Structure formats: C-alpha cells, structure tokens
Image 1: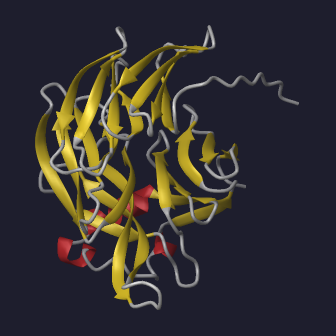
Image 2: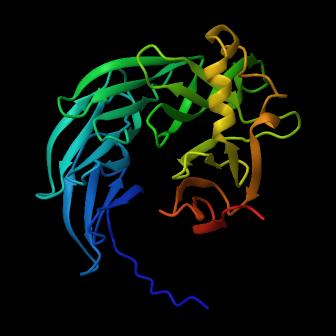
Length: 310
C-alpha cells in the first residue's frame, strides 16, 4: 500500500493549470476566473503571493532553466503570454501574439523558441506563433487551415515537430431548435518546425470509433509515442509518433491536406486506447517514461498508466 499525505490549499477562482518549479518546492497555479497566478510554497503549504495577469490564464509553462514562467492568457479579446520572473515572483513582461486567445505554449528543447497556439473564437483558420523567447518577437505564424478548438501543444524531443490537439469543422447541419450546428472531426496536427514546413491534420477518429474532444498531449522522452487525453471519451489514446512523422516527411502538402477526414488512416499509427477516469484534460509522463498520468476533470482524480501497455 502507498502512504500518501493530502493537503488542500485555498487559491483563487477556477484554478485551471499548474507547474512545479525545478526546486520541487514552488508551484504556480493559474486562476482563470480571477485573472491571477497563485505562488504556492509546498514546504510551508501556503500561498506566498498572488500575481495579477491577463484575461483568463489557462496554462503555464517554465523556461528551460526555470527562471521564467510563461502564462497563456486566453480571453476572447486578449493576445498575450505574460512572463513571470520566478526569482522575484513578479510579472516582468509579455509576448504579444498575432491573434486572440493564446491557449498554450510549448518550449523548444533548446529553450530558445516558444510555440503558441492561438485559439481565436470565430475563426476556422486558427494558428501557431513561433516566437523568439529572448526578444519576444514572432518569427513565423503558421495557419492550420479549417481548424477549431486548439487545446494543447508539445514539441518532439528533437525539436523537429510540434503536435497540436484540435478539432476541425466538417460541415454545417441544420437542426430544429437552432439556426445551425457544426460537426467536428477530432485531429492532431503534426507540424514541421522549420520555416515553411509541412502541416498534417491527422485523424483521431475511425469509423464507429471517435476520439471526441482531444485535450492534453505529451510525448515520451524517447520521442517514440504520443499520449493524448480524450476528454469526451474518458480515455488516453496512444499513437506511434515515428509512423506519423514518416507520413508527413514522405508526402507532399497536397496529399497531407486530404488526410483530415480519412477514417481508414488511424489504424496505421494507433497503438492503444486506455480507459481512464472521467474527462482526462491533462496528461504528462514520468521523467523515465515508464508512467503516464492523466488528470481527470470530471471525476476529480488522476489515472496512472504503466508503460509499455500490457
């Protein structure tokens, strides 16, 4: 039996995301409704500071050296990543994005570049900004055509690709009690990070088996598998990243544009679907890659998956 000690600490309204500083002692918690970040000292089990940030902070990531925390402020009319100096616990700057609704940021393995997903409400061509973190300057903005509901982004360990969980509108469907409704396919975008690189929106759906509402995403330390929390289906989907990369590298962009609705394609890179708790919204891997942890939004618990899957 595992012995565990449990504590509840009051922060502010609607904590959405958190990250642990490299010292293992300090936690930064995004309070979406309160437009703030709580700084928690785990040794003292107390909130030591509350930092005011932009509208609806929903994600936070650390720089490679841990000296800065990057807070995604995803309000509908907001376009900034706020920067917190972790030595002073103060907001020291911001990165302006090209579109509204920056929802998540991934830091490149060399620590020099940030990839930011802009989930701009009302747009069906949402985008990824590649930003030089030293200057805050946007290097390139890459559009994912026909995209909606961008949720999570992660770099591959070699920095050659970023992966984005997302949905794509398929068509408009008339319904009885509303003007219209939209049908979505569930996809993961595989994007080359080199300037002007290719983008493939690869299906997470098969015929009669749909991965509704893909959310959190993580890549194993060896870069072989990708893990996606499927919030609408209460499971974690595991994909063969090497096979997905091969498809992107070996295909022209014109062929990649046709993949998003191909329900026969996923069999080529699907490894497993693992049932977990209700509404897995965030996933992460242990440093040794032997365990995957899924935070379940609706059942208020964490599922632990042993890797490899038996």
